[in-house]
Image (tube, rainbow, N blue to C red; front, side):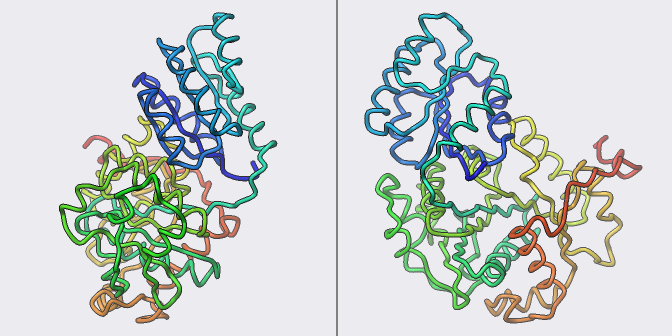
Length: 395
C-alpha cells in the first residue's frame, strides 16, 4: 500500500466493534481516526477529520444511514464509502450503490473482500501528501519512565531523521513533558481543543513551543479544570492535523484505559509499552494486552520496552517478560539513575546532559529502529512459557 488509508467507522452494534477493529487494523496502512455510533454524528466526523474512507453498518435503519451518506458525498465526492449489512436483499444492495457507496460488504465481513476493496482505494489514491507517523509511549504502570523515554526519543528522532518532530503531552493532569524539556508554553493542548472543528495547520503551529534542538512541544493544560474539558475527539483532531506537517509525532501517554486512550491507539502507527522488571508491572502489562486483544487492536503495532534493566535487585529477566506476555521485547534500556535523574532535575535531554551514557545510546537506537525498521527484525517467535510464565498466568 502506497500510503496510509484513514477510516471513520459508523457502527451501533457493540458485538461487532472488536471484529471490525481487528479487521481494519490488521491491514497494513489502515488507521481508524474516529468511531461513531449514531448516523447523525457521521457528517460532523467527516468534516472534522481528514479521511479517505468510511465504513458504515447499515443496521436496522439503512434508509437513515444512506440519507447521511448521500449528503456527505455531495460535499466530498472523492470520499470512499463501504457499506456493510447482514441483509443481502437485492433491492437494498441496489439502493446502497445508487447512494454512492463504493463497496457493499455482507456481514460478517470477509477479510479478503475488505483487503481487495482497500487496495482499490490505494491504487486510485490521488493525494500525494505523506502523513507523519504517530508513536505513542505509555507505561504499563505509573513511574515506569515513559515520559522520560518519550521526551528523549522525540529529541533523538529530530537528530536521526533531520525532519520535523512534535511531542504531545496527553497526560492531561500531571504531564511533565514541558518540564523535562525546560520549555515554557504559551498555549497548550486545551487551547487547541476548544474549537477542534476549526483547526488549521497555522493555528497549531502557533501553539507549539520550540526546543533548542528543533523539537516542537505541545504541553498539557496548566489547570485540572482545563484538563477535564479535553475530549478524545479533539485530541484525535489535533494529532490528525499535526500529521500534515510533521514526520513524527511522539505522544506521551495516555496512562489510561478508556475511550480516549482507545481513540489514540486507533490512529497510532507504533505503541511503545514501557515496563520494568517487576512482577506487578508485568501483570499490569498482561492485563492491558489482554484488553487490547479483546478489543481487536493490532498487537503487532504494540512493542515492549524494558526500562532500568540491570538493577541489582531484579530477580526477573527480560526473557521472563517475553515469555509471560507472549511477545518479544523490542528494546531494553539499561539502569542509569544517576544520568537520568540529573537530566530530569536540570530540565535537559540526555543528549545534552550525558551524551555518552548507556541510557542515551539505548534510546537513540530505538529512534533509529523506528525510523528504519529494516535495520533489525523483531518478528521473533515469543519464548515458550517457563516456570515464571506459569506463575504469572496463574495470578
